[in-house]
Image (cartoon, rainbow, N blue to C red; front, side):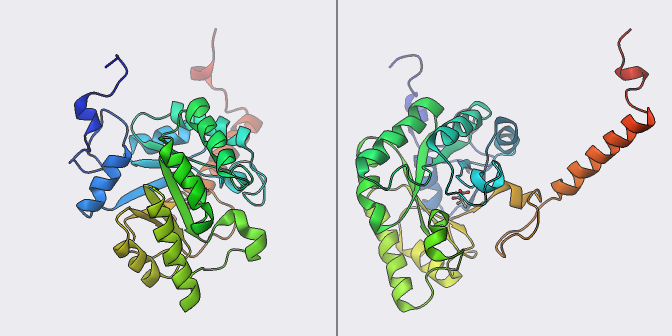
Length: 289
Ligand code: KIV
């Protein structure tokens, strides 16, 4: 064992709770599996920069997702589709640098894994080696099963993402709820079982009826992470800018806004500008002599 190898204790799944539990190392896939065993629900937030990620890490959020929602929530695009691998590597590396305890999962962006399992392997390896993330996420159920298998065989933990998959926004013609009706519900169940069978350690269920998300959660042994999937999934994820009230305009029905940062930040900027205009800033205590 070299100096940076995990100790035998670190190799064990912690029996402590994920939230407020183990604090001397990063959360692992084994900790998440153990949480499902004891029916402990957990939270995941997106993060796109070191500073914000550090706040969530200190707050005890066990898993942070460098989502390709960075496209619309951080980089100013309309959708996730334009996000590139180079952008994901840069944002993911910043989130890793800003955190100590959270498991960091990074999205494989549109076009970086659909061509072939080999392409998925190449780009997942970039996120692991260049950014230092602990896991990758990719969209698709049965259609992505072979890629998931290859990554898992290579030792890369994979979080799958089924239901509403935002990279397919143009094919869906928007962001409609998925899994409604018998055939769609059966397909969602097949997708969930396919990603578990392929070795995914967890699966995101986005915008699906709560009853169906509950059924999937009951039938899978891996944790389900809901976003617009009702209350019965093992975990819940929100896009941080929605959760904290930074997003401009309408947010989806499944979002709960826990703060109004857009107003707080706007008020701070206006107060600063007023002080500068009126000569109240800088005052004596901000001035060198
Ligand atoms: O990119 C993202 O933020 C996501 C979440 C919505 C799960 O995939």
